[in-house]
Length: 484
Ligand code: ARG
Image (cartoon, rainbow, N blue to C red; front, side, top):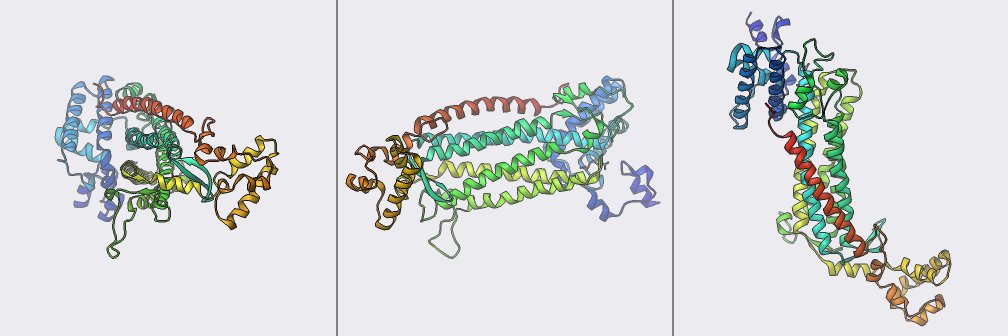
């Protein structure tokens, strides 16, 4: 009898004769993590209740009581005054239980024409929309940092590598702007993919097959600032692709950050000496007094794995699920939250680490002088004098082979020596194959020449500005309380 009483306190207790075990309560409950969506949940309920009232499905008076009660709960939650209960299982039933405790009978009418299945589908979509804006905004900040490092280093020559071997000279600006391009696409993944995929309003789908109540779905969409309503109730309650889009955006972003961090780790070694990290973003060793370690960069590299884990976990969780809702789907949230938290922390740290890093441009320039980074330019020189490229390649290859034994660079050879390899060499070659010139002459769009990179700086600044407006609009749009 006592058991039955306890079970009856559950919102779904009617069908049960005795209570769930407390182990099951703990195992089943998601409130520990889905309480993060209290705002989305409450705003969704406010819109639903207001619409129920407008449609005459519940009385105006009840609708008003519910909306007022929900605003009260939201304010208390925001003030940290609410202790969520495991017994009430998840955020949806916590809010509803609390509402009924506070306003009585009317609270029990809130869930009319709604299921937790379409409710959670709504909350997570709203959460993704918000989170996509926040991540994209952080990305813009980091992109601005990359742009300013690039702006200050348009002429800072450094070696570019393929196979981790010196290849051709580039500039630090060009190298930084490569990452800016990646971050630009990542911003679009958050806004164009994740945000867009989360932009159809699922309420009205019920548990699986909609509802017989004459809900006004468009009205709810309007109140919650959705551009669209979902077109299939079964799809709406059972897919989580918009969450996967968000975690995928996080994963690719982490991969990009991780590559940058790997370079920072390498560049900060004594062997490279290209960068000195600020003390603020370095750490020491408990034993070796000499150490200054790039822990921030290493941790970002390390955390990339856990975000891939979040993506793999959810993809795998989804792959065997028959339509429609299955409780497995409750696993979506921790993966999403973890990926977002990790990206937020990493972007913030990398942004400051890069802003404060001191680039040793002299050392970079010196490194670009070594390793025959001008060999392609020397070959191209001969091509312009009429030699077929394959033969020019062979000539320069021979010079490099000999100099590897003798020491020195191509420009260290006097003109007579160069002519022994090819009579086409003239004194003008030295200017052409100077490392600075090698960079300056690579001025096609997309190339490393300062002029060409300047154009990408301009286009980046323009894109950042345009994107900032879009994000502000989207964020302001989705992040304000439902219209009344
Ligand atoms: N906590 C659940 C989740 O996150 C809410 C939906 C539960 N629906 C159900 N029919 N059990 O997925």
